[in-house]
Length: 364
Image 1 (cartoon, one colour):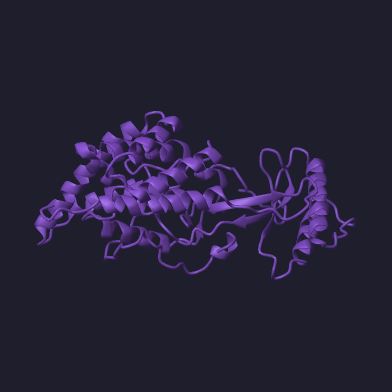
Image 2 (spheres, rainbow, N blue to C red; image 1 turned 180 degrees about the horizontal axis):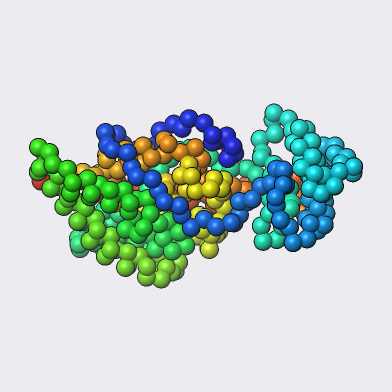
């Protein structure tokens, strides 16, 4: 799954966090279109029929400058299309240069535009998220909140949650979105259906009430301003405590290093999707990276099955991309992912740690 076009294939099952089980559930309702406007690498033109340019001569010039730089880097022959006029010359040149790609060329070549480029060649590399769900459980934090001996880990994790929500942009499960919609669907099923497992249905209803109360309460705290220095102080206090967990300490320490390397970086900045006219065929990043209530409660199996059922019907996945523009000469191919793999790995580690704090009491 290295490029958007390769995603057009039968999808494997989405992988939940370690230790999750599947179950039978009804298909989830379709996700409504998100607020994805025309942004980073949304436009690719091949051919250019019907594309309007305020200054087509400038767009044509920009394209052929980028074509010269691209061919110079990879040793390709610049196509001679001098006998064609705009936009046929661009469409034909693009077709011919793509024909020079070898099977070993593992990048996608696109004609792109953004705020600074009208018609520029770029190579694009996609970071493979491997059909994985990066869901962060919130119920463990809620359980810590009312335990006096858990004040230090609570403060530490709350600071981390603030960073993930406010800076990285991880959506919260009580706000409108995929997770919120799935929990709402489960609630509707429980209200509408009658069966012989009334005690279990009541248990699920109570869990939904708990997650709503906890989510609204914790979100108010999570929205309090994030402060890196306070996070560092919380980590130092936690390290000195007798009950300090080495795994939690190391994970938060790595998160702090990530913040210092990328103090304002958000997940969505490098996300890319193919515009499919809102046909509900794209898995957007907010659908597989999110806070959620719990992976250990009586709702989790149904939730995971709903997510799997919905994703199985989709043909595209919005994933991080790294691009190299050829508006200027390039000395070497340069497609480096650092923030994305570090962040997603840390989210995975954090979720595993939180799962250790989460559990179902025998009488719950």
